[in-house]
Image (tube, rainbow, N blue to C red; front, top):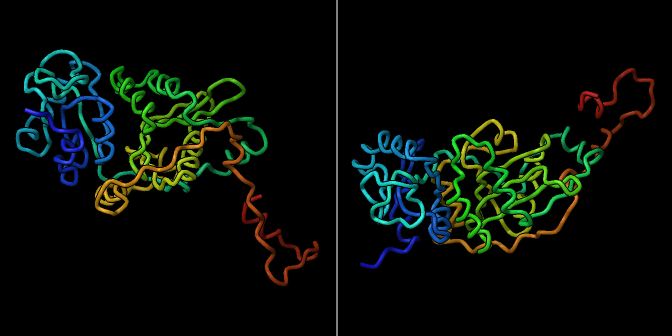
Amino acid sequence: MTAAAPEEVFAAVDVARAPADGPAAFGGDLAPGTLLAAYRHGLFPLPAADDYASAFNEARHEEAVLAGRITLLPGSGSGSGSGSGTGTGTDDADPYALAWWSPDPRPVLAADGVRLGRKLSRMLRNRLEWWTTADTAFEEVLAACAEGRQPPWLTADLREALVGLHRLGAAHSAEVWEGGELVGGVFGVAAGPVLSLDSMFHRRPDAARVAVADLAARFDAAGGRLLDAQWDSPHVRSLGATPQPRARYLAALTDGAGGAAEPVRPLDTARLPAARLAPEKPRPPFPPGHGHGHGHGHRHPYRNARGD
């Protein structure tokens, strides 16, 4: 029997009706084609770190799987098996070793809507001599994002698959440099007009924020529209993310056209000054009839508005 293509496998997952705060599916593999098909259907992987984590998934979600509320992907074994089960998707692999998630709501940012904040913007313009690149140190960013994370979801199998996607031009990173040192970064997977951000790191305060802003700017310039932050949190809200119903997010993946959207253009990978992400904003004009002298006894309206 011929195995179903990855696009067919994930098209059969009813993501729109999946649990809002639980996995949408279990099983499958982490081949680059499988991974990309999942992102195109609004799913991202969360591998179990070890056998204990896989057993926990089974104990917690088996009832929902048996009831059909969570999909067991074709080719997934039904036994507990051994090992991670994330490589080949053989029948004796443990399906609970690999979960596929699609939270509802989904925190998203417009590609041109990342917020850095006034303090960081001033530092970029006046103090921080940072530079940024894209797709220049993808594997270094992956390794840095995996350091010390608990639970360690960025497994060796997943990292290998993401490197494969990067070589295919579907996974991207942005890097922040201080001299020759990598001080921050972010990586994610592009699916049509949407870039799903998987993880970020920083070795200097706010360097991860700058990496997100840089990747967003490059994605926007290449024709991208939306960044998916995957998990809601105060941190992604501070960047400008807002929760969006999953149904609306799924529609954005196909650009509202009912089919797979065209990929964006290749990203600009040039070394660029981070200060460009924080341009000086022009001061608002004085109101009509406002005097410019010092005899009115009032604070300057512009300075007062800023709290200076």
